[in-house]
Amino acid sequence: MLTLYSYWRSTISYRVRVALNLKGLSYETVPVDLVAGAKRTPDYTAKNPRACQRWCWRTALC
Image (cartoon, rainbow, N blue to C red):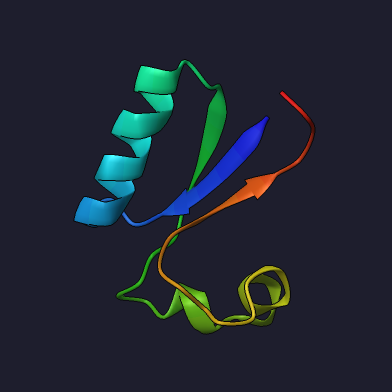
């Protein structure tokens, strides 16, 4: 299962969702509120040290 951390207005996140759906991969979307500064929280940067806006996290093999 993949986890996609994304912001709803991000066109990159939209393209990643389209690609995952076309590939038939299951994923869970976790919203990240960039306006509120959620990508700078310790929980987020622990998983994503570069604090990129969008990224996938693989929790298990598909």
